[in-house]
Length: 558
Image 1 (tube, helix red, strand yellow):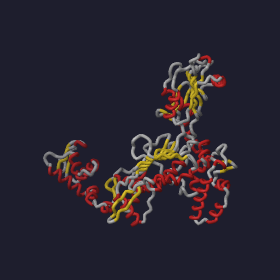
Image 2: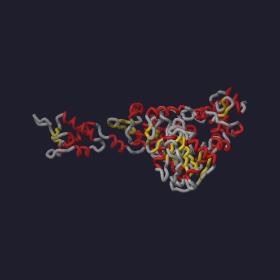
Image 3: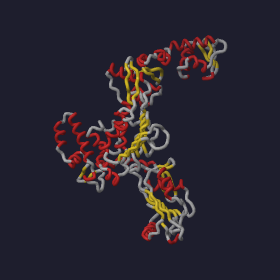
Image 4: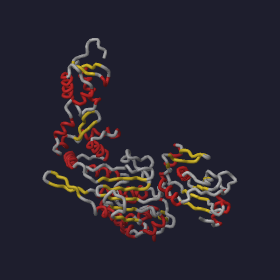
């Protein structure tokens, strides 16, 4: 606890400031509610940052009364940081007016990251006079609109060429040259070979008007430079053989230019990358649990799209059959799981552009499409974002092959039709294979797969894989059962059941047992057809009616 006269003078200066701008004063002589403290922290962060001062009256002229609240402030600070992802700090100041045992407790709250309002307990808080209220929609929209700012393009104060790793820059140069040669752009490749490091970074827009950007730091910086200027720009790798808590079997921390360790990360994952064999006729084909392409794309996404203004590192956790990648910062405003394949909103455009220049990224914004396509083609679950919230993107890549017959089916169809399927086509195909209903935004795409003979319509908006899949899987009987009989056969079965129960009649649930593959609405439609033909009639109303054979008696208004 500080009794430094200089800090006391600073406190007294704060006490003369206007409350409601950068300060929030609370007496809190005995205690202060932790949940209320969290809300004030969120509100201050949303308003630009400031200080919450406990032990000072909020009415002018302010007086120091001392506070006994939160007698273990470091524990309180950790609790705040666990709930609100900001670098919150505190200090204790002993003021002469408090007596020998009194103290003023000050929490220092940083500004929220650009474009990211802070939420606590389900609401975005702000202050309105003496009240805490939820932020208005207009205010939220204004904050979200800030995310158009590219942090990675900002100049990093104090960063010089001496803080960059030559190995990282040379790796970038080699990749850029290789891409140019692949495109048969030999003049560009030759020019790149002769550039100095400064000239190369100017061409990449990592060096602007003599200043180095944060993109240069993140992609090419030395360990010392990252530690000094942006310590959270690290990637932590862990291997765990099970979900049990405790230390990881292997842990590596990479706090240096991304180009130095990018290949090493994949090599590390590939060390424990087992093979899954599936039978194709007389041949056995191995499939890697983690395919290189989606893994690399997921890592590139995490590094280029994370929020570098939030504390915390990118975590890559490898398990025997899944890979978890967590990166600070939720989805950019306007992006969610449903539209992630359609919309592009890079959070760090300068980083993404540099990765594109050298060929690590094929086209900006296409990485997630490639991940979906690759996983689906190998009959693995689609990317799982269940751990994603407002403050992190949690991506899980599951590596278990679910259905080897589906892999053979996909290979056969693509070979026979020479069809080019887009990411949405693959997502639709995966949904059909799982037996899920199609998302409404994909329903219009079903016609393409129907025309190619990849899927078949069962009824309404329901689909199934085509007969060719079931033939490859040796499950033609399952195809017949799932496809069901044609409409006339179904009508005949219902009519036969009615006639066999001529005296008692039949209820809807009995008909549903006769045709278990159909929904009750479809069964009702078939019964209406039989009624129009004069073959059956109902006694009673709607779902509770009893159906009898023959037409309705004359004069019956059922």
